[in-house]
Length: 136
Image (cartoon, rainbow, N blue to C red; front, side, top):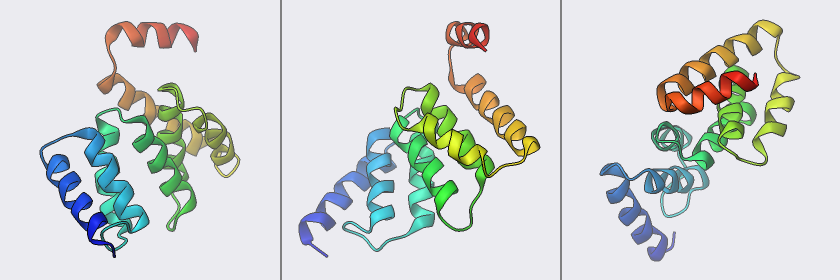
């Protein structure tokens, strides 16, 4: 492993531990890909989740990818995070929602949509929610 990557990881980790959402995403990405640190999917999920909770769209998308394509698969969470990322403007996420939906039962899709709406309720402004609900 390159010393430069190890140094970069340490710097991003310091910022991530202080709550910087972009650094949390980068740390998650570095763990996911094994850049500057041994690959660790659990650590990647942890850091992506922290960033996603702070509305880092790329982290939301990556969680959808992890849950949808890596073992063990969880299509409910893959669909949920991908749809949230799509609502936040990620250009590839809507296509992923459609792909994951093909692997899901109607009750799983309904569950994922309910969880996504709960997440949105907690993380969006009232103004945005009124706009969103009027479009449904």
